[in-house]
Length: 75
Image 1 (cartoon, rainbow, N blue to C red):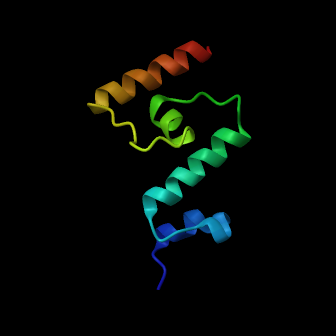
Image 2 (image 1 turned 45 degrees about the vertical axis):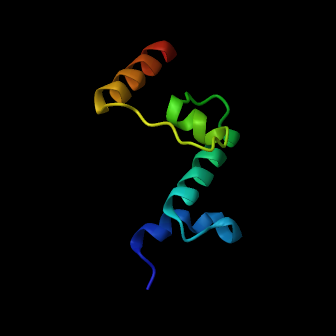
């Protein structure tokens, strides 16, 4: 039986893997490729660039601060 989360990656078709992290990386790469005007945080940037090591925020606050800054910058 497929886990419910697998539905999120149905559109990947033949590219879909059994690995959640790989599937998520493919989705982020597709989104950033097809929406070049979208604001991209550091996490998405490293996924888009296919970095060997994913970016990790040191704290939730660091993530929230970056998102707030990106939204402010877009305004």
